[in-house]
Length: 191
Ligand code: GAR
Picture 1 (tube, rainbow, N blue to C red):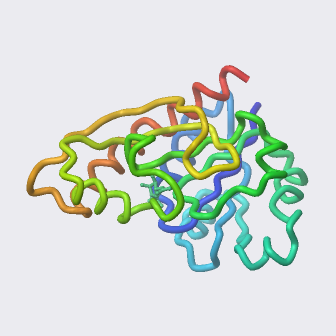
Picture 2 (picture 1 turned 60 degrees about the horizontal axis):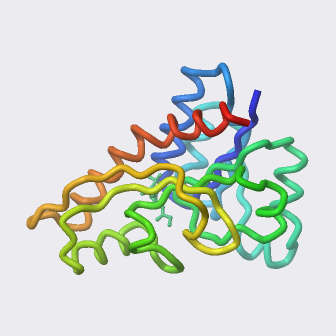
């Protein structure tokens, strides 16, 4: 049985989809821990509603205690880390501890529209400003650089002329909620 930790910074709709999936399909993995990067993140409420242990580790906390994230994941005996709208860079020691066992989802077709500062609405605004006719999601392994690890899966959607950042975000979220839990399940099945 694979023990998953979800790291998130905000609303947590992907975290919700993942917790639902592993509650309904518990054969290979279960969500043991949710870590939010700020106290206000709604994902903490979602974790509580699912009876999943949750806590906050902020950037400030990591700066004053550099080993905190690694030690927390080690203490909880986490096997695989799933980023679901997590806005902080994963520290090197954590990447080293989980080789090809940290998975991220990015709301665009990497390598386009990735890198530092490219998250959430910023990504969709950039896609629209660039007059792209398609966007999508990228699920990839995490290394020490933002959005640069090996790609596991991509899915596309159309960008229509009258799409704005909100309508595009809604299409992307639909793809994310459909595919992210399944792809995580496929990855852990191969461990
Ligand atoms: C998702 O669209 C995810 O792809 C994106 O943040 C959103 C979080 O939504 N992640 C990034 O932009 C990472 N660079 P959620 O909190 O509702 O799951």
